[in-house]
Image (cartoon, rainbow, N blue to C red; front, side):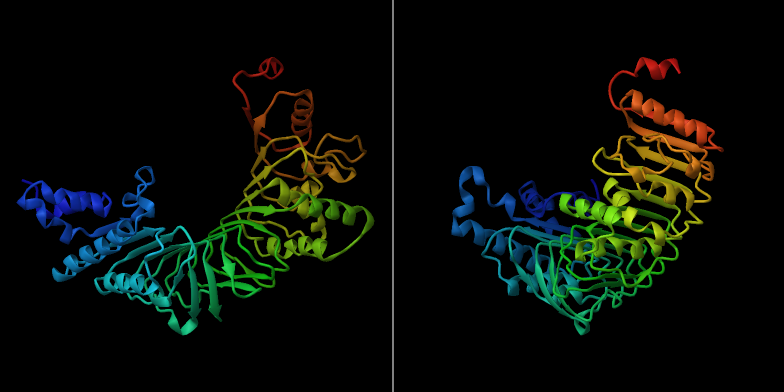
Length: 424
């Protein structure tokens, strides 16, 4: 017979409703739900749309009462909780009720809390007050937060998705153990956003709503993923220990047109200035070792060539290409990577302009290949190869002008390798 601890561990992998149903198996299973350390409450198992239950008031209440009963049963046994996950879409759950649930599990030392709502829901600051919480995940909630309301001395992982966060001088400095931060589809109460934390190692910024500036005071950051529209400016970017960065700027076709006009006619406006200020973000990442740039980002960097930093520590550079985006910044970028050993090109086709420079074989020019001759790349990887003659000419161009090139890896996009490549 398995010990009770092992049975409870097995039940912790089920939803709490499924775990509760095992109480009918025998007397031994009847009270096990009171000792399960991981609780997952999901009202979708109560609101089955195929049976029309989602419109029945008593079904909504049954979910609320079920959570109440389980927490009361566990509380009577003083059972500790490791993880508490709450997912609901019902409109019959009040903010006060959720606060009581969270306070209940906090009192029993929960280390991981997740609250996911399928709709607008206002949550109090109670979830930011715990001396044991290690992981906090919030999805689709609104929070009015004051700096004095934050007490999470053990928190290492913070995931905020579709959260409307209204803060008072709160820039994540109040989280002394924070190591991982995800900010996805956030709505900020302030136009200017500051991410400031001395211990943060991993930061992901994805499609947030920010009309002002973005600052990063993160001296211990190791990994940075930024998929975002250009902020107004980047006043502070401190990332001295950065190892890997993935930058994927979101741009509109109108912004690209304005950027190209600025290149050609020296026209400046607020939109172009935003793109020019991306250079301040890039300068703060000069110590990075592995850099991954999207096609949009490479196009925008054409406005930042004069301020392009020298990436002395960079060993691996990855560029994603698109036939509608240009390579104007490629020559400067390659020249400013004096110790790069690996270059990965995810596609060779790009928008051809007079400013493609000497990095490609698109235009005949006297100084063709100059930026490549100063680049110490040993390994060239080409992904998404389609076997066109233009791509073949590009590859020959790289072979001719990269002085230190030792190996080329080509990943063909298709089922069969083209004959001209196989023959070479």
